[in-house]
Image (cartoon, rainbow, N blue to C red; front, top):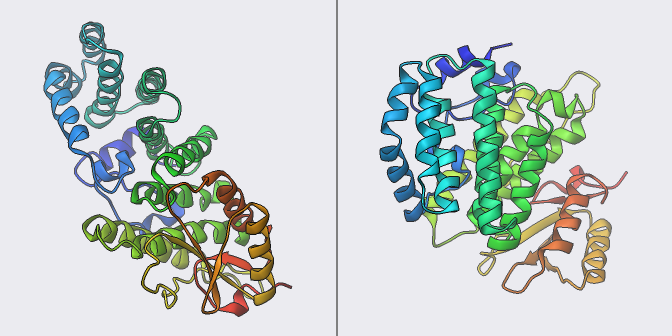
Length: 349
């Protein structure tokens, strides 16, 4: 297993933050931009960019000390600077910035230093919660930033809290930004990568297929966006590449063994007006049962060729939708899947 110090040196230059699905899959993985991955957002806002620039300038001395390996001195200097910040939000922002520079700039990232990085990031999350409330989108970003670092430090088997962090972030983003938001959709990519880890999936094809379904949801959701192609295009490409890596790693299966259905399907049902929608496919009977489940939740899905479509919009309560999507992803609704695919693949046994 690659230790954190060696792994850090391997990824210390540009484009180091595309997370490893696991050591066995390294040869299949591409790299990604650190700002996109650690913010878990298709594009940083102007305010986030300004805060990043301001904090980097404010931490110039500490960064220089970290690069020289004088970590204790850098921490003492940072503590004084943190106490001098005028607002709790500025302290939360500075805490997160210091943690990331400690992670990126430390010459040798040993276990004690890694623990310090995660501790500072956790304190940053708590700071955002206290200032902005537990359900603010910036809390979601801080949660994901800490989870991404944990996955970089322990790519084969991240700590169990990582799964919970992504789930909390997705819940926050879906409620505050909407299920079809590019930022919300972007959260599903690392969630899928985490689910596909051998330490999580444990060889179960159903678990790999859940991960693939999450990636399909990103591809289809991003493809439906018409007015933000500059942001939707890279997100769609990232999800497509991740799906291809799953196919290379798991799609072949073993002779006589059950194998996952990792197939990126086209979107023949993406007609005009489906810019904000979730598409479901499967056999007619299971799709009708799905429609009844939506109706019981006082929601409506409609036919679109052989598929069903749930249109998103203002005023839609995401809670029952999330429950239904979870049931589908977990395989509790037999014969139905999110996205489009061959009906024979989803026919009930």
